[in-house]
Length: 625
Ligand SMILES: Nc1ncnc2c1ncn2[C@@H]1O[C@H](COP(=O)(O)OP(=O)(O)OP(=O)(O)O)[C@@H](O)[C@H]1O
Image (cartoon, rainbow, N blue to C red; front, side):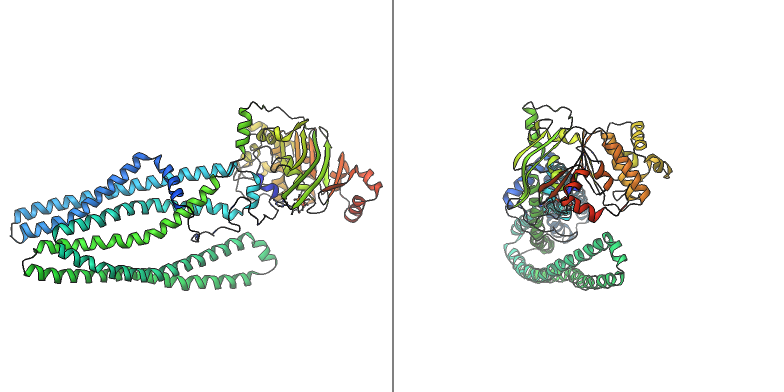
């Protein structure tokens, strides 16, 4: 992996992310797929203003949505009124001509209503999809720009959840709630106005049935919601367990724990089944229950309406209109209550997205510096660390007064026990993190004054965990320098000895790999990343040697390729191979964030200190060429 485009999160992929969240986010993993976010919004008004900022970009679509919603509602309100009129003016008076005419008008009203509903749905979907596309793009761009410390502190699950679940929540809400909110309010007000204009007493009777409906709906939804939340939780458990079992498949198999996994899965699966039945059956009974309530309301209106009509207080047509209006009137009340929760969770989701968008991106400094005239020039590869102090968390120093000098073309081997600070040195050189005191100089210039992108373009990174992207082998090598020709890509592969195995593959250089590396061995993937670095042709090279789980032949291949790659470049190698260490111009032995010994292999053996001990324990009896 090479250059500024390398996958930075890999540099620290094996490190435990800190639980202390300096970005001000909630610690811990985000909701699993399918889980309902439990957070409530903190600043609803502010968040809505920002969503409005996105909506504003689609002003004309928004106007369409509102206009169609108003028209649809008006048509819905007109229908019952016209039916009442048809009864009173034509059906009761047996005027068939007028009845047919009215019938045609009503037909037109219903068809137009349906047409506008369709346009409204289409426009609302466009509005929400365009909006969330913009939000998703902004979030993805921000993910590309944020500094590495942000990713070290977040779990991948949480970041994924922001990009997928939270945005899906916003999309659903924009799609349904916004339209329904406008429609419900209009419908509610419109029905009451229309009903009042027909009969005040009948309106009162209809309105009196509402509290009963609301009461029953509330009771049922309380239980359904509880079971639905529980169902989502169990679904999250199932998802999580499947995910875990697939990624840890080899571990499960090697320890022979398949039966235990199946048993545990059965338990979780069973819990999901039980709660699923409760949630589904209760929510399924909601419809029939509402129908019964509606029929009861119909009955009440028919009986009272009949009595009023008998006393000539209202006409039969008014009863018919009321039967329709009572239906239209109770619906929005239920909808408004249901939409509120969806709305809340969407605002909370949007808030989590905006939280990320508000973080300071890494490149903004560079843009300012470039604007100030800081030009970037090729690097020779002279690297100096001058009394560098660094800590990830203020209270835990990691590097102390660390000084080193690498001349252009030199190979520096970094050795030392785990957790000593080797990767940290690399993190500082690539400016994934910035130092707290001391200086790092590249070609005599302070690293902080260099353009981060230009600096990284001059640094090649080949990590233990050879990362390949989904795409062809050719694409993967070309990732080192996007402008490279096919010939250059193949030359780079030949240079590192990868050409032979690539040509043996079914589609050669056009073989498609998935992000997990497809059917390539770890060693072959490593060779691809080395070819990628060759193509990038960086002045400074960082190699994190694999602790070797590849076969000896591939291992020799990789060693050869690395040697070729290191020629003429300043190389920092987190070294595990004796050959690399022996051939290095200088070995730096790091312990507890300090360089405790430095020198060549022979010099250090003569010192008979930490390095000599390590050598005697690890390498003295092994024959590594
Ligand atoms: N992102 C981070 N946030 C907080 N602490 C960290 C982070 N990365 C590393 N550390 C801590 O810094 C110290 C030095 O870690 P570093 O990764 O540099 O060690 P290393 O010498 O590369 O170890 P290894 O050989 O195991 O890779 C360790 O104590 C580690 O726990």
